[in-house]
Amino acid sequence: MMRIAIIGAGMAGVSLAKALVNHADVTVFEKARGVGGRMATRYQDQFSFDHGAPFFTQRSERFAMSLAAAKDAGVITSWQPNVVNLSLSPSAEIKVVKSGYEPVWLAQPKMTQWAKWQLAQLQSPAGSMQATGHGAEQAASEKKPVGFSIRMATRVAKLVRYGEQWQLFSIDDENLGCYDWVVSTAPVEQTRELLYPLLPERPFDSAEIVGCFSLMLGFEPNQAITECSWDVAYCDHPIIERLIWNHRKPNRDSGLSLVVNAQNSWSQTHIDQPEEWVVEQILAAIKALFPAAAQKTSYMRLQRWRYAQVSQAMKAGKTQWHEQGFYCHVEKRLAVCADWCLSGRVESAFLSAQGLADKLLSDLAQHADRASKAAPSAYLKG
Image 1 (tube, helix red, strand yellow):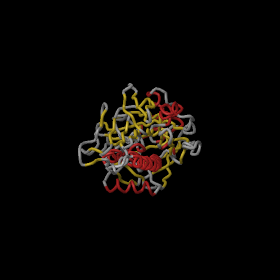
Image 2 (cartoon, rainbow, N blue to C red; image 1 turned 180 degrees about the vertical axis):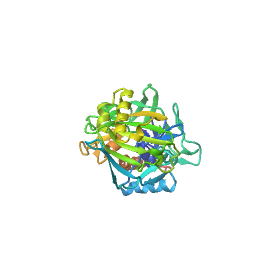
Image 3 (tube, rainbow, N blue to C red; image 1 turned 30 degrees about the vertical axis):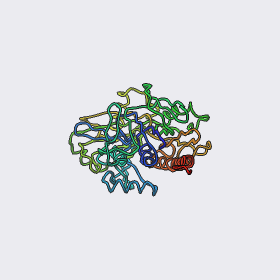
Image 4 (cartoon, rainbow, N blue to C red; image 1 turned 60 degrees about the vertical axis):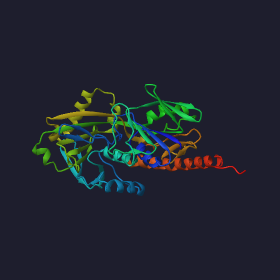
């Protein structure tokens, strides 16, 4: 059975592993201590914050089928938020313009739950999921996937050709084993760092990802916030892009909690500024837009996402190995799928993984057919 290494346990990596696990021996390497990538939730005291992707949408039929299974399992739910446009006029008067908004989707009770549930679908009746590395996070099930393992807190730093396979090494120079295929689902900068020394071209130069600051604010109960008429506010402001009341989402057992997403352009410009300065600028902007949220907080924390939003997706057709939504160098057996291969949405990560899975399954079938024809006869005529 072919061995495939997948780098990253976000939506793309988990979706790809699920698609391939019955056809190959799959190992996922995740540098963090938890799965889900930017589908992340932070808990502190009585508060919870979806400080990465706050929700996601569905456009394609293929994604809809995946959502239906997760919804039936109670892992995701839809949400129809009350959305407004919030702006500050030249006269310094706040203008609130209500707008319609399509239903969105949430994992529940936290955003990481969908990735955990998908990993649990890889289980078989025997054993328990193999999760290793410091701070390893166990899957929801106590069963062991067939041909599947995951290593948490393990960053793949180097690939070395070893015969017809790739030998992987961690950032600590630990030998992580040999694999027939290596797939990166990591952010574009990390993918370039890992794969460019091994490729004759620079296939990912067209893709660009910018950063984002997310400020998490927790409040004691107060009337001004409790009676706030909106759930999500999109802001016409140079610093603030969006305000989201996290406690108003379905099945979020949380105190009054607000997630503030800064504008990507502003975040990227100031991505290396000291945390205290960034927080000061964001709080001043919030005070101008929505004074009730600028009062004293019970909890405050800043998340600095260096790779948050796709400003330009990878261009298909640049080389013969480029496909629509993924990259697959069949001769070298190196591949890439990620949200930045398409449009940057959660659905983009899923569709990129599904496209690559279709390509790899075709290659695996051809490899199995060649191996079958090359195998010696089960018996000899005499």
